[in-house]
Amino acid sequence: MASLSKMFLLPLIIGAAIAVCSVGAGSVAAAEGKTQDSTVKAGENKDGSKVADPTDSEGWKTRAREYIMDRRYNDAVKAYDRATDLKPNDIVAWFEKAIAFRWLKKDDQAVEVLDKAIALNPGNAEAYKVKGRTLICMERFEDAVKAYDKAIDLKPADISAGYNKAVALLFLHREDEAMSILDKAVVANPENAEAWYNKCSALDFCGRSKEAEPCFEKARSLDKNLLKKKDENEPYDYEQILRERQPGGFFPDSD
Image 1: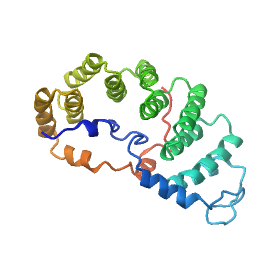
Image 2: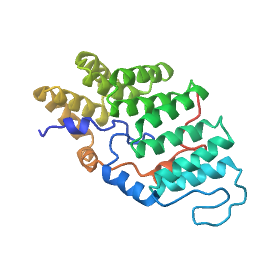
Image 3: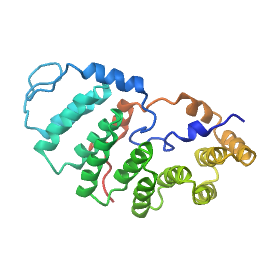
């Protein structure tokens, strides 16, 4: 079986808000190239036409999402700045601004913005999950574990937070704790290919290839296309994410 360690470093959650570790340098360079000479002016759409109400925070958020789909992430940040200036307590705008910063690989700014979103709504687990994944990419693994612990406290049934906490624990060489999380996941979800794949990847990452092989075969038996999906390593399609998310944006309602 080929080594899966490299794949394990990628985000483990299918359908999450962002693929935080998989944004290629080429994509960032392209985005920065596209935004180098562009500006966002009050009262104008991105094509230069006038908007009906430049003081509408929702309009700025809509425009920011369009910029994200166009990979104009710097312009997206500027549009979200307009939105939060007009409506400082808009947790959706703060959260989505953090997503734009992640695509620009400006992780410090992303964490700062996520902290603002969390301060506005400390009961929302999703913000802690995205913060944890950002911290992993910054190699701040202890802080990432703390963020995931908070997400798990808020939503104990959300196994995706546990998967990513296991990633941080592995980088901290706390293998027993990581494997305990992944063992519980396959017991609780024996027909879930992703759960078996995550355990396989973790074992392989730890150099336990012989133990990883049966998990790999189990994952493949449950989903024959799983490896093809993993090999693609493509960033998430923002247009699809926007279509799938509720009208409020990326940020789900707090329980």
